[in-house]
View 1 (tube, one colour):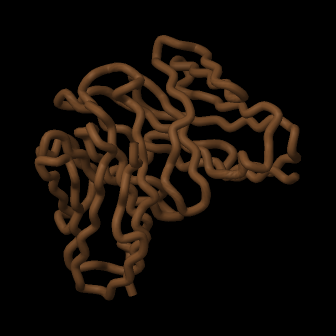
View 2: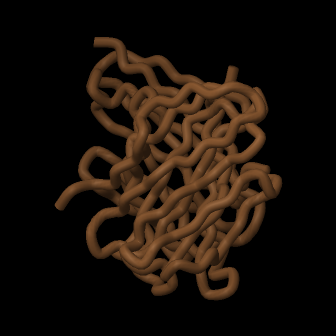
Length: 118
Length: 114
């Protein structure tokens, strides 16, 4: 089975621009979560999608948004980029996250998109 | 804000030694997981321990959980150079609206010197 695929791997943008990141989960996984990782703040939860609906949201401004398609692929968008948005953005998938059980609870991560805002 | 905080922030040991890292968290949890991250890559799940379990083993890994102290520890025995990575604890604080929210600690950077 192919793992979680994130594209692009690296991205350089300038302040004020907007960016879209893509995540293809493992086949059969219906839940996709997004995290922002920076040296200063660590891993911060952005949001989670399941069956095309946002189920949970972290404490990020409205400039951060996402969506999930019927094939479970997900995109996240950041508008009006700021220097502080420079980070590694990680996507994680899980089979079915609303059922207790280790099979469903562990997250499978992609390699991330490294975003640099200049 | 981070749910978990790891201690120490960085750890350097010789190959063959044991490595212990600790995680403290703030709210009650359903389970606690440990993940490993190699430099600049995604995280890999290592082990999950439930709130009603006290200890769990997987290969060279041993995890303990003390819910009264809201803390967990990860022990890696007989460390190898390949264990060099950052280690994160992650807590699941419950099923908000039916879906869990997993939050990560600050991480411990482990260096194993050959």
